[in-house]
Each structure stands twice: as C-alpha cells, then as structure tokens.
Image (cartoon, rainbow, N blue to C red):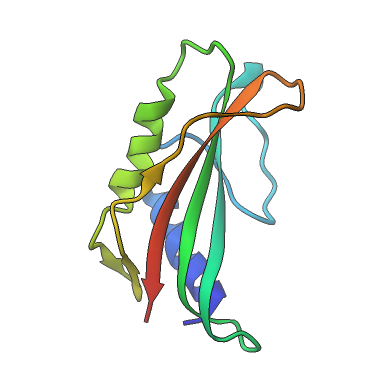
Length: 129
C-alpha cells in the first residue's frame, strides 16, 4: 500500500473524530492554540517496506506527539493520549490499514527548548494491505 494512501486513511480517521485535541498534520498550515493550549502533532513512521522505491509500505507506526504547557490544569494529558489509543484500537481495520496492538503512551518528555512545554509520545503500530 502506498504511503500516501495510508496517510489519507489515517488523516481521514483523525479528522472525523470530534473529541481530540487539535492535530497538526505534516505539510499543512497549523496555528498553535493560543495561551499555550494543548495540541498533537501527527507523524506516520515507516517500518517495513515492500518496495522502497515505489513507496509501498507493509508496516509502520502512527506517532502522535501531544504537546502541552508545563503546569497546565486545563487538560489531563494522559486522558487526551488515551483518546488517540481509543481511536486506533487493537484489531481495528479501516481502508486497508490494520492496527496491530493496543499502542503505547510514553512518559512525558521535557521540550528542553525553554518554551515551557512537555511532549507525550503516543505510538500505535499498523500493517497495510
């Protein structure tokens, strides 16, 4: 399955969800929420290719980096991360993509760029047909 087809399927599923944080998609304009609001950045990370030259992908990871302000009381980052796992639950099949496991929420990572933010990576493995 072509990476562009996988991206379209995943982006469409995220777009259809109404209760997620704002999501920044690669190569699209995104205005970060005002006042240090929380948001997620979506990446599709290839793992195993069938034909790298043509961009045909067999397996990979969906990566959501949840970004939120340090000390924010407006959201519970763990609950927000769990919403992404619920959207892409283990065994889900959609548009030629199969979710292979329950996904993983990593511990918060300090941005270290002195902008007062943390990131929580959410990783979900998929297979493509």
